[in-house]
Image (cartoon, rainbow over all chains, first blue to last red):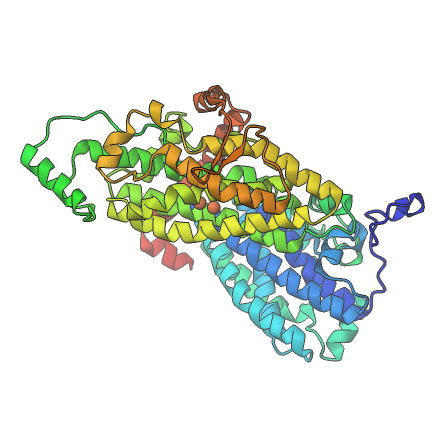
Length: 269
Length: 328
Ligand SMILES: [Fe+2]
Ligand SMILES: [Fe+2]
């Protein structure tokens, strides 16, 4: 972006990146977007958490995820080779270009919904990154090593809260159960690989997320038992996040996140 | 952050053992630290509780104006840095509540005073953050003013407060440099960015000068705090130090403080500011600043909305081990 304000350039101001997505770039963006969008959601709690100690913990979780996103975007930029950096990917893509799971873009809701959403994601992301430390791609394996340590903590923290809220009072249990009803349908999407990602997995470059299902199931069952929660039944299993078909919520999140950067294309901050 | 001289000293309470009081003052005069289990006059204890808790409340309320820009930070680097900064301020609140608790008062009681509108916090956080440049201005000026106030508190006579301050001051210096760097980036950026920086300085300059509290002539309670070595410099002395440090920084940025009377006094080597509108300061302290109601309302809402979470955590912790073990 040149920052030159010719009228002919007007249509270009703040407009979205044009990307040629290889399967690897697309897979990297998917993982990076999961981390960024969930980190952004957690950062919305700042100043409004129920306990001061938890205020600090939520900021830690958000910082870890934003950090993971930055590493992944940086690597995505290197893979793409078009000179795009982390901020180009985060701030100059439109909602349909985001490849995150629908789960992570769901609004925070109350503290029970935020912690349950985090638990459902971390129970997947922790083993995912652990498995990815063995990825054929050395850069990705190094990012995975860092993310895996962080997500192990996230899982412990979120699971402890799910148990506390599930076991605590009638009200906390009711709120947690309501959050579970709302969020559970979005979990299926975590285990599906797009065609391109499946090919990468076959080549050993990345992990097929479907292979993590048994581990995730075991974690869910263990924590739900302690929290007196039952898995909801129901057929509805929305998906489409990986292909850029999002819920209405993502557009609002991105409008907030991107508006300043897009209002000053070419500016340095 | 952020202490503010709000005339915190208590009137002397019940009569104390004169000999014990004399020994206490002798220890202070000999620059010895007072620790939680040591004898201390009731008025000293109450003065400290009030000052430390006001300081803690300021850290917590201070998370709100900056938190207002975390979701809109214009780059991922800035987003992470701002989130970490606001998290630091929450951490400062936590240490300070812990320091206040060594004086025999529970954090919950102090928070209740804040939410009831009885306890004060720094006036500066009742101003709005309207553009991204306000994040730079707050780091540069508000954290900068906080450092001026707090460096002397690292030598405060009360040990737990002094130790908390040492740790906090390190982080505040980092915040100040980071804020200045945001301003510098804006001032070297596009004309729109530079205008944003000047506008932020225009709005924050006077409220920041007010952070040091009323002029010395009007702050009759600071004598006791000085004798107890809680306060080591007067409000006007600290304000002057800040002015002398900050005006050259503004000029380096190419920004102009909104004070036509601002002038360098070659004879004394000090910058002289024009008259401060103390009526505005009084209004903000009285609850009539631009954001007083919103700030308090946000804290109350967080507290009320979080009640069921705290209840649940307590209920879970109190349940017999056996129930939990069988479940896990
Ligand atoms: Fe602070
Ligand atoms: Fe600070």
